[in-house]
Length: 124
Image 1 (spheres, rainbow, N blue to C red):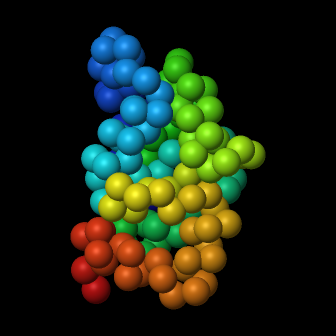
Image 2: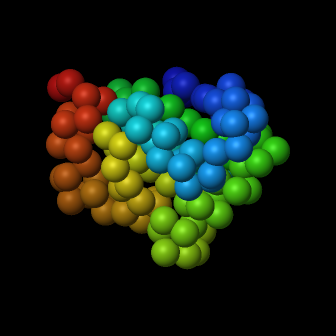
Protein backbone atom coordinates (compact mmCIF):
# COMPACT_ATOMS: atom_id res chain seq x y z
CA UNK A 1 0.00 0.00 0.00
CA UNK A 2 1.48 3.35 -1.04
CA UNK A 3 0.78 6.43 1.02
CA UNK A 4 2.74 9.14 2.66
CA UNK A 5 2.96 8.99 6.44
CA UNK A 6 3.76 12.31 8.03
CA UNK A 7 3.09 11.73 11.70
CA UNK A 8 6.46 12.28 13.30
CA UNK A 9 7.98 15.14 11.31
CA UNK A 10 5.10 17.58 11.58
CA UNK A 11 4.08 16.79 15.13
CA UNK A 12 7.52 17.37 16.58
CA UNK A 13 7.70 20.88 15.12
CA UNK A 14 4.07 21.70 15.89
CA UNK A 15 4.36 20.57 19.50
CA UNK A 16 7.43 22.72 19.99
CA UNK A 17 5.46 25.72 18.76
CA UNK A 18 2.59 25.05 21.18
CA UNK A 19 -0.04 24.94 18.43
CA UNK A 20 -3.63 24.28 19.50
CA UNK A 21 -4.76 20.74 18.50
CA UNK A 22 -7.72 22.03 16.46
CA UNK A 23 -5.44 24.49 14.66
CA UNK A 24 -3.02 21.64 14.02
CA UNK A 25 -5.82 19.57 12.45
CA UNK A 26 -6.72 22.45 10.14
CA UNK A 27 -3.09 22.95 9.09
CA UNK A 28 -2.49 19.26 8.49
CA UNK A 29 -5.77 18.79 6.64
CA UNK A 30 -5.00 21.60 4.22
CA UNK A 31 -1.46 20.37 3.51
CA UNK A 32 -2.39 17.72 0.92
CA UNK A 33 -5.22 16.89 -1.46
CA UNK A 34 -6.28 13.90 0.67
CA UNK A 35 -5.47 13.63 4.36
CA UNK A 36 -6.40 10.70 6.57
CA UNK A 37 -6.10 10.76 10.34
CA UNK A 38 -5.64 7.16 11.41
CA UNK A 39 -4.57 4.75 14.10
CA UNK A 40 -2.22 2.09 12.75
CA UNK A 41 -4.01 -0.81 14.48
CA UNK A 42 -7.55 0.22 13.45
CA UNK A 43 -9.17 -2.04 10.85
CA UNK A 44 -11.50 0.73 9.63
CA UNK A 45 -8.50 3.01 9.15
CA UNK A 46 -6.78 0.28 7.16
CA UNK A 47 -9.89 -0.14 5.02
CA UNK A 48 -10.19 3.56 4.18
CA UNK A 49 -6.47 3.77 3.31
CA UNK A 50 -6.87 0.74 1.02
CA UNK A 51 -9.93 2.33 -0.62
CA UNK A 52 -8.02 5.46 -1.58
CA UNK A 53 -4.87 3.61 -2.63
CA UNK A 54 -6.98 1.24 -4.71
CA UNK A 55 -8.46 4.24 -6.52
CA UNK A 56 -4.97 5.49 -7.38
CA UNK A 57 -4.97 8.24 -4.75
CA UNK A 58 -1.84 8.81 -2.65
CA UNK A 59 -3.23 10.16 0.65
CA UNK A 60 -1.14 11.73 3.36
CA UNK A 61 -1.75 9.66 6.48
CA UNK A 62 -1.22 10.83 10.05
CA UNK A 63 -0.97 7.85 12.40
CA UNK A 64 -2.10 9.30 15.71
CA UNK A 65 -0.88 6.36 17.78
CA UNK A 66 2.67 7.00 16.61
CA UNK A 67 2.80 10.45 18.16
CA UNK A 68 3.01 11.10 21.90
CA UNK A 69 0.41 13.89 21.61
CA UNK A 70 -1.81 12.17 19.05
CA UNK A 71 -4.59 11.80 21.63
CA UNK A 72 -5.02 15.60 21.55
CA UNK A 73 -5.53 15.50 17.79
CA UNK A 74 -7.99 12.62 18.21
CA UNK A 75 -10.02 14.67 20.70
CA UNK A 76 -10.06 17.64 18.31
CA UNK A 77 -11.23 15.35 15.50
CA UNK A 78 -13.95 13.92 17.71
CA UNK A 79 -15.08 17.48 18.45
CA UNK A 80 -15.21 18.27 14.71
CA UNK A 81 -17.30 15.16 14.11
CA UNK A 82 -19.73 15.98 16.92
CA UNK A 83 -18.53 13.24 19.25
CA UNK A 84 -18.03 9.54 18.91
CA UNK A 85 -15.13 7.70 17.36
CA UNK A 86 -12.54 9.99 15.84
CA UNK A 87 -10.73 7.73 13.39
CA UNK A 88 -10.47 7.35 10.52
CA UNK A 89 -11.20 10.94 9.56
CA UNK A 90 -10.78 12.05 5.96
CA UNK A 91 -10.25 15.52 4.54
CA UNK A 92 -10.32 16.14 0.80
CA UNK A 93 -9.14 19.46 -0.54
CA UNK A 94 -8.83 20.72 3.02
CA UNK A 95 -12.53 20.07 3.68
CA UNK A 96 -13.84 17.58 6.20
CA UNK A 97 -15.50 14.61 4.52
CA UNK A 98 -15.93 12.72 7.77
CA UNK A 99 -15.44 9.29 9.20
CA UNK A 100 -15.67 5.93 7.44
CA UNK A 101 -19.47 6.01 7.13
CA UNK A 102 -19.41 9.34 5.27
CA UNK A 103 -16.55 8.29 3.01
CA UNK A 104 -18.31 5.04 2.06
CA UNK A 105 -21.65 6.80 1.53
CA UNK A 106 -19.90 9.28 -0.76
CA UNK A 107 -18.16 6.46 -2.63
CA UNK A 108 -21.34 4.45 -3.09
CA UNK A 109 -23.32 7.56 -4.00
CA UNK A 110 -20.84 8.50 -6.72
CA UNK A 111 -19.73 11.80 -5.18
CA UNK A 112 -16.29 10.72 -3.95
CA UNK A 113 -14.55 10.66 -7.35
CA UNK A 114 -15.69 14.19 -8.27
CA UNK A 115 -14.42 15.44 -4.88
CA UNK A 116 -11.06 13.79 -5.52
CA UNK A 117 -10.84 15.24 -9.02
CA UNK A 118 -11.72 18.73 -7.79
CA UNK A 119 -9.00 18.49 -5.13
CA UNK A 120 -6.42 17.35 -7.69
CA UNK A 121 -5.99 13.93 -6.10
CA UNK A 122 -7.36 12.02 -9.07
CA UNK A 123 -6.98 12.84 -12.75
CA UNK A 124 -8.88 10.07 -14.56
